[in-house]
Length: 87
Figure 1 (cartoon, rainbow, N blue to C red):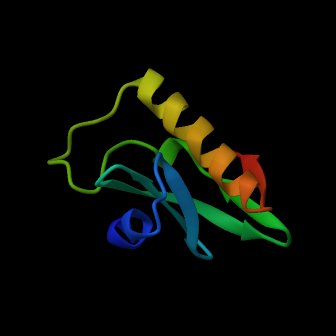
Figure 2 (cartoon, rainbow, N blue to C red; figure 1 turned 135 degrees about the vertical axis):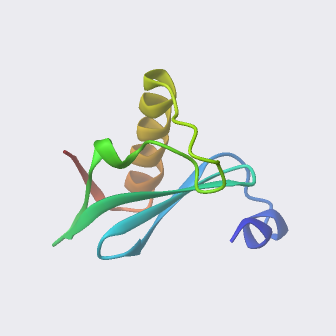
């Protein structure tokens, strides 16, 4: 996904619905899988699952980083036409 976005000239953070229970968030080359639930016309994000990058060795992110990522995910999904609900 990173290389496809690079080839298309897309920059900045990006999020997409991966399946009924997860959103994938990309920031540069880093990726985070965020749990949630598919809704009829959007996605419910479980904020408590925004804890660590997929490539980290278990290091937890800070609360300010969690809020920044959450805002980026909301913006990205809403720009794709999805309604976002926070849990």
